[in-house]
Length: 133
Image (cartoon, rainbow, N blue to C red; front, side, top):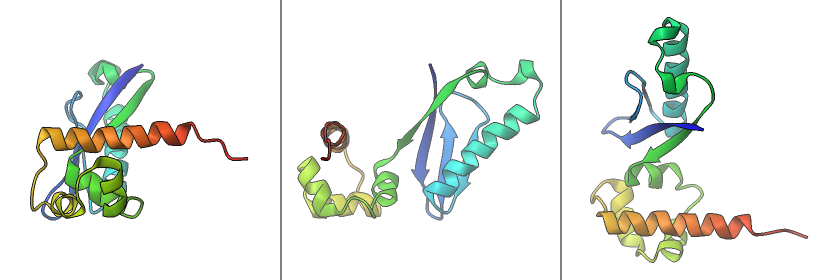
């Protein structure tokens, strides 16, 4: 299945998003939820107001959307679910450093991003294996 890659980033005043692999798909909003909806609206408008030959091939037929966050946007979007203490336990990165990332004071280097991503993926695998009785 084709994948539409959407990049979500936090700006000074709002969140912005764009499709990395389809030109002309942009969105923005005050929250990540608004930004995601703006992207979906942009896709629908692109399909509605273009002739079939002008619609990017990726948007024809079935496709899935993969959202890619910068660290600051991700940490802010999920702060109601993941506390810094929980993220420290999952990733091994201390809470103060995580706070610097979520506030935008510091940008994580690639190895730190990988630790966060790996920690979250490991948690997801563990949660998927749980069965409640």
